[in-house]
Length: 237
Image (cartoon, rainbow, N blue to C red; front, side, top):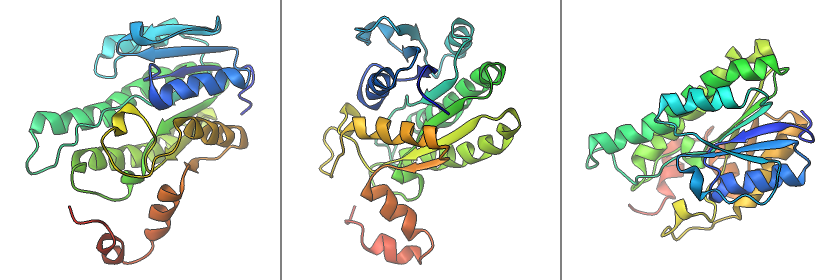
C-alpha cells in the first residue's frame, strides 16, 4: 500500500506515538489524516490536511460517530491505550478490566466499525501498536502484558478474517518509546518517531509484523527456546 495520498485515521493522536504517526503520514504525502483522541481539544493542528475527531475506545457511540464522519479512510492506526501498571494478584479488578477493555475490546470495536469503510475503499490497511510485552510478562505490568498478548493474537485472527477484503493487518512491537506513558521507567527508550517510520515502511512493503527495536527482536527470537532461560535473565521484580 502506498501511503502517499492515503487517508488515515490515528487513535490516541494527541501525544506520543500517535502524534508522531500524524507527523510521519503528513511528511509522506497523506491526503488527509483524521487525528482522534478521547479529548480532541488536546490535539494541536498545524496542517490543513488534519481533521480532529473525538474517539474514545470505551465509548461505542464515539466510535460509530467517528466511522460515520470518516467514510474515506484507507489506513487505520490503532495506537490509543493505557498503562495502569496493575499486577494480577494485587491490582484492582476494575483496573485490570480497563486494560483488557481498552486494548482488546476497545481496539476491536474500532476495527469492527472501520472494516466496512476500508472494504468500500479498496481494502487498505490496519496498524495495531502492540508491545514486546505481547510475548512475556514482567512485574509491575502484568495486566498490560495480558492485554497486549490478547491484542497480538486478535491481530493475527483479524488478519485472517479481513484477508477476503484485501485489508493488510499489521502488528507493531517495541520495547519502550520515550513517551508520557513510559515516564518513570528506567529502561532504554527509542524515539516514538521511529515507531511511525518503521510501521509505515512496513505498510508500504506489505509487512504484517514490524519489530521496531532490539528489545522486541530479542524477545521474539527467544520464543523458540526454553522460557526458563529467558525469565532467568530478567531483573528480579
